Amino acid sequence: MDIIGLFPTWYEPGVGSGWVVGMIATAHVLFSHTSVGAAIFFAVLATIAYSNNKPEYLEYIKKYGLFLLVFSYVLGSITGPGIWYSTTVASPRGISSLIHSFVWKWATEWVFFIIEVVGVYMVVYLVGKVDQRTHLRITWIFGLASYTTMLIIIGILSFMMWPGKEAWFIEGGYLNGFYGSNTFAQLAMRTFFMMSITAVVGSIVLSRFKEDDLRRELSRYMAIMGLVSTIAGASLFSWYLTTLPDYAHLVMENRLPDYFVPALLSVVGGMLVYFLALLFKPRMITTTFASLATVYLLVFGLWPEEVARESIRKPYVSGQYVYSNQVIARDVPGLNIHSEIPILEKVGLVKAHPFIPDNLREVTPDNVLEVGHVVALSMCSNCHSLSETGIRPIMNYFGGNTDVKAIKHYLLGALATGNTLYMPKIPLKDNEAEALAVYLASMTDMKVAEQWKLKASALAQAKTGE
Image (cartoon, rainbow, N blue to C red; front, side):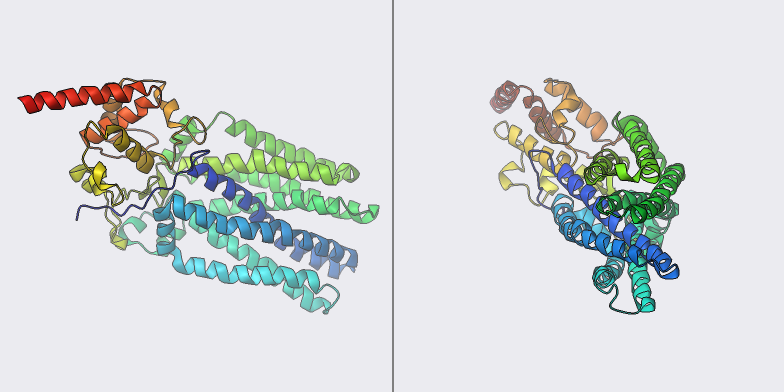
């Protein structure tokens, strides 16, 4: 059958489904990176505490751990499933590609996550209740299990950009998809930035300590960790860039917002200043100041980074074979996956999409606007808002043009051939392109749709008369 395996489209009209996923994911990065970084920090600090007879350090671990239980593990356990839910409805085939490629990797990650969740409780509540050797061992198991979850996730995130090895497209196999230069570069960079985030969030807890000597000592540890990690992470960013595919560099040069580079530079500079203040003037780091620094890091650091990472892998959403609009774009023989582009070229979208209403499978003067709307929903709305607000409003890309023929010419000449930098190749049939063009023009002027209907009806009647 000439049907492709698309799902119904979830469209959020206010901000767009892409931004819903992005907002949840960005918050989750803050929570998850803090939890992993703090786990490693706890292991190191506990070792120092037991080696140098510093039981007051354990009190800080206990308070930071209690803070993490809400900040990272409660909020993280809400946003984590939130990512799964939102991406499953926004990008079902993207999620499917990750599950089918890495099902045992996900299972392994969940095992270590369970160890991590149990571990943070044990680290916090067993301080002073078990012998030092046992508690230190628990702390290191907690730290290593937590970092293992990051090791696994990074490989999957890298696959979403592009498979680790070119052989994956022929042979499949999770090792070919998981391990590549981008995996290791991203892991190194994120590890250091993770420790920077841990230091910023940890200073919220530290700001509540009243003992000047203890606060000064711990501030020194965290400031040095933050300074070294921020500088190292920024330095490794250039290595990370060298591991990206060529098209990703083109997208960065042409499509990233103007604020991207200034935002990242301001965050790196701001973090360095913050850690210098933490090192030399720890008393000035109040709870409010530290909380504002965390929000600043989230809004101006993590959000632009997540936006950029999502943008530079376009037009794909996973593995360079699933388009953002869920169409399979290329063959993957090793997984018995076949491109759906030939089917679209043969019968068109409205006949190949299983969830198009039957009354819209033939384009007529009466339903042309509705067909255009359905095509835009299914093929465009994952990346473009169909309103004036939200993610990349599609109407802004046509400069207020209401010339249906001109828009149709673009759709057939560029979009249908894949002759664009950023968007997927969708070979619409002539009447589908016309319907989409009518809808896009009507977004600027609703009269266009009525005029086009009248014109199309007149042409149809003339042909019938002949």
